[in-house]
Length: 535
Image (cartoon, rainbow, N blue to C red; front, side):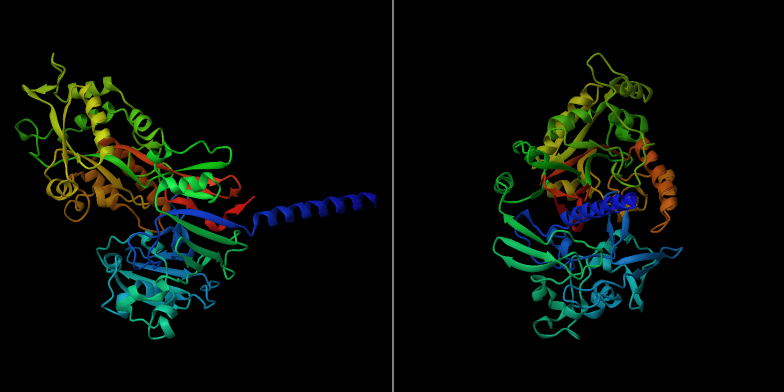
């Protein structure tokens, strides 16, 4: 009997401790966030880039996790037809809008087919939405999208925040919300939004937006923090001072250059590195007779491209220009991605190897230190933005590295508009230093498939039957195992054949108070804010 009492007491204490820990996690505190600049409208259909505030309020059918994998949000599951034209989503039945109204497939239909409700509507998402041929509401919690035959609509587009139809459709909206769809930019809910996310809009002042916990939220006990305040600052230095003084708990999106000015806050704050969804690349122009001795274009020889890659010291660039805050890239897939393959070729500087490749390609080094073929020097112009000092520094280091293996680089700085229209779009360049924006979707069709030369972003006119065949095997959404193999082969070929020389991806830093827990960094920023809590 005595043993039973002891066991009962131990269990009781453990339960009490567990409950106490849970209550701590469910702190009802207030998170003070710093935000550079004041956000405008909070409407996913009317903005080209989503404001951080919107991500707390609105939700899409799917979302990206910290590994850039698409997971369900308002959709519990989905099915994709074999021809990748019909996408059927099965929605959560337990979701309410912040005003208590139930969320249904009619809200999804309204958001994605808004032009069908009013042809005069115009917004930055129009081009994407035009690829949807039809939408069928199967029932309150099932909806089918029928896409155009030659669409390039990725599943990531389903991250678009859903709008409440009962507030935006003038046929059913009431009072001040009865605004014509074609005049949606004038809708009062753009400034006092209603969503399905973990936090609801509470107040907007000159220097602050306040969000409160959504008591209708469907995800268990989340969110844990009661109030979130977004405090607006006109510049980084002012926001940093507020963070250091303890006036705000979190400052995100700090560039490597800005980090050089940050004092040591490690006693009171945690630092989180988030690799950018983008990388710096050297883009070859593969067009026949683009340049070179007798216009034969040395880039047509893979060995010359590989020599360039082996000659460049990426570690030095990252250390000297980014203060070590960056990662080397060898493909379009970030190392954090679920689709990243460790089997790709990685290039660390190897001058001897670069020299051997150039010798094999018929470019021997002469006494003057430069390489020649039939008496003509291996030399090219590196085109870059003249108004970007960072690109100027990268280009100077690339020039130094390539000179060590006998390749002459002439810098060709251009104004941004001239670079884009007169050089890149016109195909009139030899090599270009570019900042490449990456998509969480690993599919690189838009950059490297042959048919993307005319209708995509294959601005170097790279053509490879092997790459075309690999990208053709992409099974589309819902084919993760097949796609994982496809993306591994894609990266392997990409890093070997080198349509670009990939350089690096900078890392942005988030600094948070040590008492703020549950933060998960990713290339898209800090994930799962509904699961953050104060310790």
